[in-house]
Image (cartoon, rainbow, N blue to C red; front, side):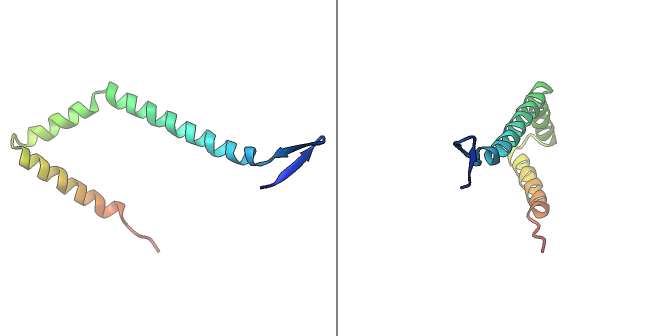
Length: 82
């Protein structure tokens, strides 16, 4: 920890190092909240559910489609780069 003397008082420089990441985290949280609100307002989850259920009335087929989709996405998301 670095202590800087400013006009006879000790001031911790750690506050400035923490201030920037906290601002970034608040911006990310606000953006996430806005995205989630827009998704709900546009009824995207309902459209996705209706789309999946239109494939088949059988719940096992819907579960297999979801698992297949997750498997394919997982192949691309877990790519290790040297």
